[in-house]
Image: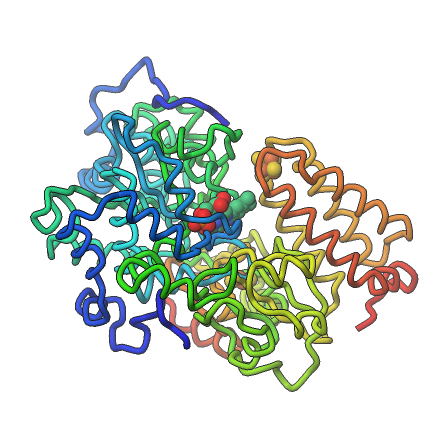
Length: 421
Length: 176
Ligand SMILES: Cc1cc2nc3c(=O)[nH]c(=O)nc-3n(C[C@H](O)[C@H](O)[C@H](O)COP(=O)(O)O)c2cc1C
Ligand code: SF4
Ligand code: FES
C-alpha cells in the first residue's frame, strides 16, 4: 500500500496533467459535492472523522480547524496554503506541486466550499520556481475546464486561487508570519490569539493548511472518511509522505500508511548506504529531537509512537545518519540555522539562538568547556515556552535532544578537542 | 509585527506612475496586483521587488526600492523592510549566474563541504563573493527543500541535485 493519496498519479506519464488526475478519480469529489449540494457540516464532519491531522508539523486535527471558522460571519473568508516548505529535511510539498498539483487545487476548492470562502492563496517559497510554474499551469487547466473561477461547473459556487511567491525566509512557514508576508510585510509572527480562524489574512477568517494536508482532502471525500482513517493507525489517520534523506541508498519521498515500522521505511529507502550502522535519526525535520538509531528501529512512524520516544513526527522529514557523522557538527549546523532564521522579535529567541550556536560552535571547534553542556541545557530551557512563535522551541529542542542522547560525544569534544568519529 | 487589517497609508501618492517603469515591468507588476483585494496592492511588494531586481541584473538599489514604493503607494521604509528581511533580495551586485549552495544538514551529510571546496577552487571565490569577470557569484543558503537530491545547489531558477565535482564542472561549463 503506497502512493494512494497525494502520489496517486505518480506512476503515470505526465502525472501533473488534468487528464491524468481525472483518470485517477480527480475532481470526482468536487463534482459530487456540487451536484448533491452537500452541506458544509457534512464535509467538515467527514474531514474530522478521517483523522486527518495537519501535515505541516504541528499535527493539529484538520476538521476541527475548519470548524473554528464562523461560517455565518458576513464578508470575505480565505483558504491559504502553506507551501513554504523550509523545515530542513522536508521536500514533499515540492513534489506534490510538481507531480500532483490538481489534488491541491481540488482540496482548496473543497475547503473553500466548506468554510464559505471565495478565494484561496497558495504561498509557495520563492526558490520553488519549477513547482510554481507547474502549479500555475494546473490553475490554467482547471479554469479552462470550468473547475475553477466563477460559477464552477454551473453550480453557482465561485472560488478562485492565486499563487503568492515567497522570497527566502524560513520563518514565513510559521502560519501568522506567512499571513504577514502575504500582506506585503516582513514575515514576523503575530501574537496568538486571535487565531487565523478569527483574524487571518487581511484580518478576515482564514483556514491555513499545509500543502499535503489539503491535497489529502479530495480522496477523503471521494473514498470516504473510514477508508482514509483505515489506512493509518489510531490517532494518525491516513497515509503520510515521508521525506527520507541522509545516508540511505535511495533518498526520496515515500507515501506510506502511518504506523509503518521505521525499519520498513528504511528498507524502502534501500537501507543504509555502504551497509553502515544507523547511528541516529531525526524523525520529523530539524526541529524534532534526534533519536539514536537503535531506538528508532523499534518505533513506528506515527504521531504517538515518535512522541512516546521523546521526539515528534513533525513534517515527516526523516534524516538518517550513519556512524561517520559527528553529532556535534550536526548540531552546530542546526543551531546555526535557527540563529540565522530567528526573526528577532522575542529576546529569548533572538539572544538564545545566538548563545546556543556560539557555544555549540566552540565545542565543535575544540574550545569548549565542561560547563558548556549544562549551559546549553539551561539556555534551551530558558527559551522554551517564552516566545511568540514555536521557532524558539524548535531551536531549543534539538539542542536538548542531542545532548541527552549523545552527551559522551560532546564531552569527548570538550576533553580531547576533536571528534570521536 | 503589526496587527492591522488595513493597508499601510501613503500620504503623498505619486500620480504619474507610468513614468516609473517600462510597460513590460508595469504589466508584470500589475498582474500581481490584480491577485489581491482592492486597496491591497502592497501584497504585490515582494513580487515587484523580484521583478525589478531581475530587470536590474540581480540586485536592488535604493532608487528601485523607492520606485516600487511609489508604484504601490507604500511608505518607502516599508519597502526597505521587506527588501532587507528576505534573503533572495540582493543589495550589491551578484554574478550573472548566482550559485546558491545548500549547506544544511542533509546536504552536509552528503558532502556539501566537498562541493563548496570544488566550487571555490574552480572559481577562486568564497561565499559572498563574485568572480572578477562578473560571471559567477557564490552564496550559502539554507535548506532548499530538495534534500532527497543532496548535495544540491540552485543557479538562477534551476535546481541541480545529486552533485559531484564532475557534475558541477559540466553544469558550469554549460553556462554562457
Ligand atoms: C518556525 C516554523 C516554521 C514552519 N514551517 C512550516 C512550513 O514550512 N510548512 C508548513 O506547512 N508548516 C510550517 N509550520 C507550521 C505552521 O505554522 C502551521 O502549523 C501549518 O501551516 C498549519 O497547517 P496544517 O495544520 O495543515 O499542518 C511552521 C511552524 C513554525 C513555528
Ligand atoms: S520565537 Fe523567534 S522567530 Fe518566533 S517570533 Fe519570536 S523571535 Fe521571531
Ligand atoms: S538540506 Fe540541502 S536541500 Fe535540504
